[in-house]
Amino acid sequence: MGMLKEFKEFAVRGNVVDMAVGIIIGAAFSKIVSSLVKDVVMPPIGMLLGKVDFSQLSIVLREKTDTAEAVTINYGIFINSVIDFVIVAFVIFLVIRQMNKMKRQEETKPETTKACPFCKSTIDLTATRCPQCTSELVEQVK
Image (cartoon, rainbow, N blue to C red; front, side):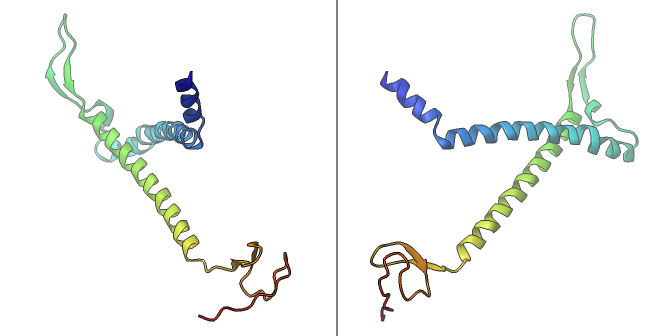
């Protein structure tokens, strides 16, 4: 019974739930990007290249017979997948870049508060008396 309880604690931990939500959103985003590439990006590119349908590009290794299907290398589908990957990777790069930028801004903010040495409450850096415990704050000489 201990193992079941331990698994339950693990499964409902915040990090696991956050990760699951991220995976679900990522899968949905991937479907959107795949549709964007297949239905929006590739048709104009195919028209510019002489009305080429990339999803139909393939190399036939063996023709279809009465008893066997054709054997092909579908490199057009691979090209679509590479473009999907590049778009997803670029969007993830932009998101991570923005998160890092916000984190750097947060780290460079100057401190505006300090802890009262007597009651440990948070007070303004320029305070001369603690509003919580009313202790007089003497500037320490370094």
